[in-house]
Image 1 (cartoon, rainbow, N blue to C red):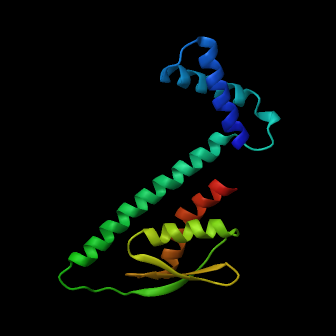
Image 2 (spheres, rainbow, N blue to C red):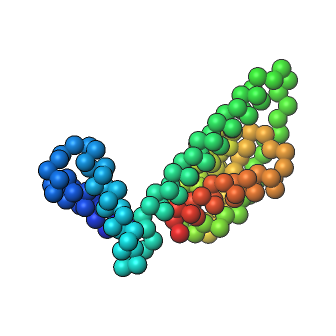
Image 3 (cartoon, helix red, strand yellow):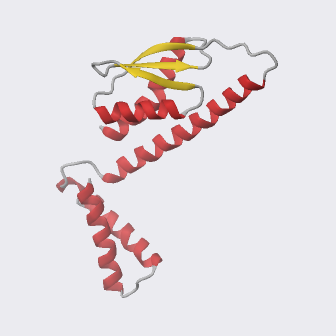
Length: 158
């Protein structure tokens, strides 16, 4: 993947030198032409086209921003109620992620959303223990994490 990115930048700069135009617009045109060349020769690369990974990272970022906004609103509603009626709790989240950095990313994304905190990770790295400010249904919380963060992380890493 890194080779494809470097090759695309090289082709963009090559285009700038051949066109004798050193403007940002010339670089963008060269970058897009380089991307077309890489797409045309994608069967010669061992890995998938790097644009797929870039797109997956952008989707993960958008999912995080959406979850961040929704959890901020939820915590704000909880705090602004006249009578605070919350059910804090800790639940075990069995994860399908295997590598250390995948689990670290998932733990950080969960911790950065207000109202949730990863308290511990099991020794075999298969279970995350998550504290939440207000939990009604554990199964719903598990499926929410699995269908948002974990799914997006798997798209980025695999």
